Each structure stands twice: as structure tokens, then as C-alpha cells.
Length: 195
Image (cartoon, rainbow, N blue to C red; front, side):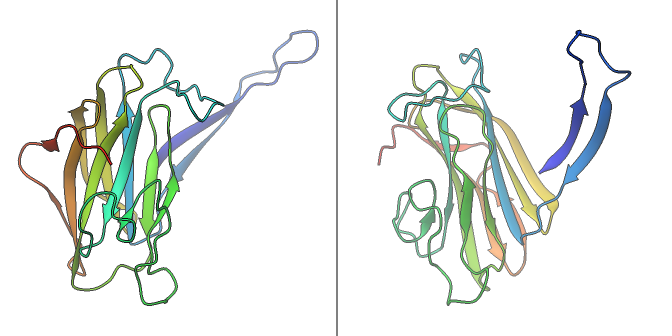
């Protein structure tokens, strides 16, 4: 979600550049009832845009977004936690759009990771968490969580420092009241949480 500028510059085989670059601005607005986005900055990572082709190693820190149903016993619940190892859990009653989906898992730097829920259940409170799965030796990261309701930014919590294996309980989302609340006035972080 956000505003983006795409720029195209054309250069011929002689190295001559066409006149001014062409530019177009695009606004990306989430259409689902709930859209949660995780981004992070790792100062110790010299290139947060690079990607590893080796699944056993990483070229950046790995933070993970978790979206928990009220029935979840906790983080990593294989049925009621939507995250990288359970990206499309079956929570609802079979109606279209009543299950959440993690659309992107970024394993080596900056994000975004995002999840969407088109048709939330009534009478429930969802929980949003961020887990610092592995810093891969790059040191602490600074996380940002954005929660959108029907495409409108309801809250953004930025600059939360996470060390390796920290678990941050960031937000609750009550439905159908569409109330987004931060968990605590200060970030609620549990250290050394492994699977």
C-alpha cells in the first residue's frame, strides 16, 4: 500500500538518452476489509534490496508477520495463526473471503510482508504480532506495522527495535466494530521466542 513513482528512461545503442524520463504515479489502496503490512529497516544490512537464491542462507534479516484468530493458543499455532508456515489457514465457515492470507514472506530484508482478510468474522478480536525469526548476523531491526481497514490507514506503529527472536505483540483488531488498538503504550516485546 502507498504511493509509488515509476520512471522510464530510454537510451539508444549509441548511449544517447531520449528526452526527459517518462513518469507515472500510482496509488496502491488495499481493497480487503483488513490489510496488515510489515516493513523493517536493519542498519547492519548494507543492501536491504538484495535477495538470496540459497534457501539455507540469507542476505538480510528475517522478520515475520503473524495474524492470530481468537482461538489461537499462541504464536505458531498451526491452525489459527496466519504466517509464513501457514499462509492460507481455513478459519471461516466456507464463505468466499472468510480466510486470511499471507501474500508475501520476505526472508532477507526490509519487507514488505502483508496479509489480507476480505470478510472478517463478527464478534472477534484478531491479534497482530511480529517475530524476529533470524537476524542472520545483521543485528537489530526497526519494525513498522501498518493496519488498514477498507483501504484507510487505521494505525502505523514505526521504529520498534527488535533483536533476534524477539516477539512484538503490536495490535488488536475488533470486528465488526473495526477498532484497531495498539497493545500497550510502549511496545510489548517478549525476548527469545523460538518455535
